[in-house]
Length: 263
Ligand SMILES: NC(=O)c1ccc[n+]([C@@H]2O[C@H](COP(=O)([O-])OP(=O)(O)OC[C@H]3O[C@@H](n4cnc5c(N)ncnc54)[C@H](O)[C@@H]3O)[C@@H](O)[C@H]2O)c1
Image (cartoon, rainbow, N blue to C red; front, side, top):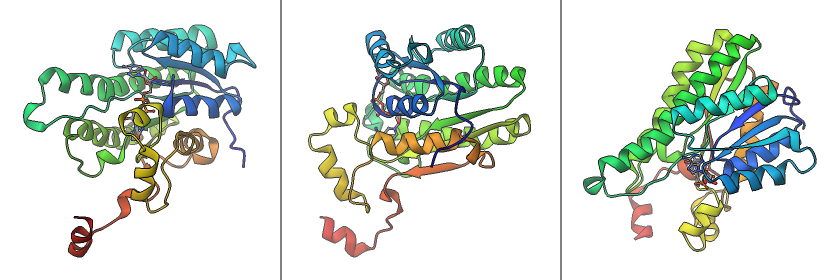
């Protein structure tokens, strides 16, 4: 099925030089949208935009910079307006997964996680929503949470806190922006095979396929397709919701005997 309401729409996707964000841009370009593709790494951003915009370079523009920095966010939205004249969709996808023992976690690391995962999302949505309101034709926002924001995982307290907060951000803003024609929803991926996770854990795919009831690891396209749906007209009555895309990973309740079998 092809979703409607995507063609010629203008999207900003952060952290999109590779991984889940790259897949999202791929899906949007295929659907006929125009995209500003952000990445921290200028070469990665330019290479990704050149690759995804090869059939129509004007439809996919790179914007390099830190998606957690408010001045950069404002420049990125200005850049989008200058080149495309409007902004209809935003996905603050860039996020930092920083593992660390709670007792050793340093304030500077805590602030790095908060700056990207929360400040970046909050202020991109704030600025983009102002533009959407001026344009008068609504807009769609998808926040990128994680199943780590729903259940507890070792050494991920700070990361998990930010991902849980994004769900609350969507709940609040659904209420605040809904009557202005702006919908905001959340996608919550489970373990997803990206360039980064493949590097972090040898045999990531094999290990996580065993953990998921579906018997497969999450792929960036799984997340991208869910985002595409949430950005489309078909999802216009969905607002403030979180959709888990985790192959059923976090549905599993455990009996004491399950724990014995695992040890
Ligand atoms: N991969 C997973 O298993 C998984 C699971 C749950 C949630 N998520 C969330 O999905 C999102 C994307 O995850 P991913 O694994 O595809 O990302 P990733 O870590 O692979 O990063 C994707 C891109 O983001 C860029 N980036 C990093 N810091 C940036 C910054 N400050 N500003 C702009 N760009 C930056 C990187 O250069 C990279 O090209 C994140 O918010 C992550 O927390 C991922």
